[in-house]
Length: 264
Ligand SMILES: [Zn+2]
Ligand SMILES: [Zn+2]
Image 1: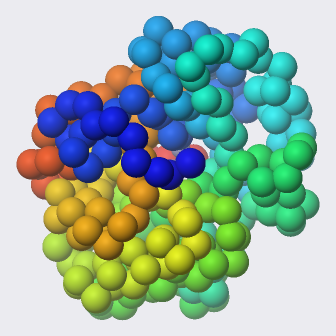
Image 2: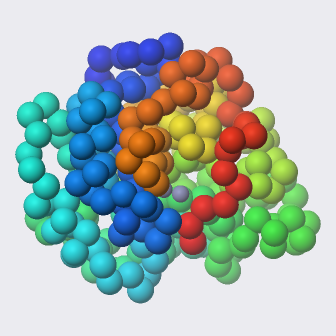
């Protein structure tokens, strides 16, 4: 699903903007639109691909209901509807905060298509560290970055069918930036994404990753996908940062409109 598609918009040379690969519904605590409302928004935005995804933790039980709701949506000519769950990476070993039965059913009939790997917290050696804990813990920037990338690489291999959600969105929260990520770690991330066929998002909500990371991943053959991380139908398929600057020119630092919190 991460194959090449027709470019559109200034950032389209790197990332096709005719897809939205990260859309939340009311199955997420913080989503405000139903899957049907999101579908209608995807059609109205002229998308050819949309991925419905909601937040899970290890004890989440709604996934069958969510998948049934998406499966019950009317088919729309020219629009591919994909599914997923979004879960944080828990630790440096790449353990993912999703129900085991969901992870076991990825890509199977009755299972979600992919797990979106999220850096909502830093995957530490012994478990997740909140941004506050990272700041108060005095971890060296190089260690923070290495933990994050290494855990993401391991999670990609463990999960098998992943998508990297808003890569490096954690860094501004711990007063770092993508400039703190050395090329060799970007190459390790790219190598794992290519080896596992894992798409990597360029995320409108979090305005990441920026042009340096996008260019390096793209040169390595990584399948880049556009996502809004919409939590309301009005945001589905609507790219402002990504279309006007985003992956093509602007640094991947959050602007004043960028959110400062995210779900678990
Ligand atoms: Zn997220
Ligand atoms: Zn999300």
